[in-house]
Every structure is written in C-alpha cells, then in structure tokens.
Length: 194
Image (cartoon, rainbow, N blue to C red; front, top):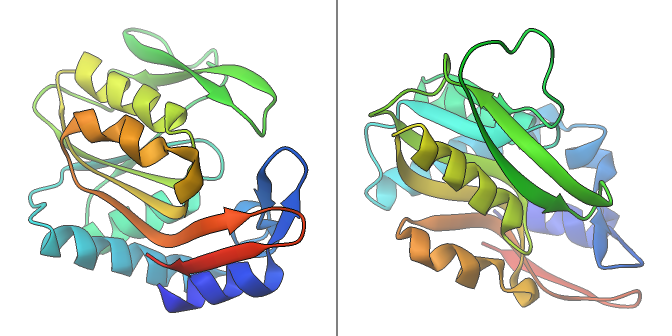
C-alpha cells in the first residue's frame, strides 16, 4: 500500500531496541481513512490469494484492533481480539497462548473466550506488525486450540529483517503485509509497499 509506506517514511521514528514508532497514524492516534483503506486492501488481497469464506477475524489487543476491525468490516464478518489481561467477565472455556511482546517489555498471555471462537470457523489473523512472528504464532495456536481453521495472516507493517515471515511459513497459509521495512536503524528507514 503506497500511502502506508509513504506515511511510515515521513512520520515513522526508529527508537532504540528496534522499535518503529508509528503512533501518529497506527498505534496511538489513528488515521481513520488510512485504516479503512487498509481493511479494504486486506480484503482484496486475501480474495486474490484464494482465501474465501472467512467467518472471523482475530487479532491481539490493542494495536491490532483497528486494522482487524477495518478488515472484518470489509469482509462482513465479526472481529475478536485476544485479551492481554483476562477480565473477570471472561468466564467459561478460554483459549490461551503466551507471546513475547517487545513493546510491553516481556511475555503476555493472550486469551480468547470459547464463546467467540468456535470449532470449524475460518479465521483470518490481522495485526499491526510482523516482526519476530511470536504474537502471530500465539494467535495461530489459539485458532488451533479452538478447532478452527487458520486461512491467512495479514499485517500492516512487516520488518523483513526480523525473520518473522520464516517462522510463520509452517502455518501453510498466505501471509500478506501492506508495507515492508527492509532496513532500519537510527539513521535509516527503508520501506516499500507490500
């Protein structure tokens, strides 16, 4: 997506520890038009990749919710987000998996109520970043534990140099990114449309 890549180029900030700050339009303040266009782009690209009959979009809170919601709206299906802290209202059966979160500074447990992810569902995972792939693998584990079928993984921004795509390859589903960071450090930010 050309506009997303351009916004990253113009507004993205590289922080120590390999963190890309895109808070002005993705992770803190949202650009609604850009977010909705990203959802439409995911819907088009997954259809073109042969992904059909999606019944649910899954993401992790918080930053994945906006692109997941936009994608679910474009597909006309519900969106479910994995909670990072299990609320008291999450009673009954729960699917959980652990993932390392670089921005949270440690490991988090992702949880989804069995009420909202059922056996046989066709699940598309959408998130904000693909870096190491660990959060996405945890979400894929939740899909498997629910007896649902993972049909694809989409991310707004991929850090190609962190090998997350290679870690997702065994999932055997299309992995699509709308913008790809080829290289970044405090002085360089090389990004291209996905």
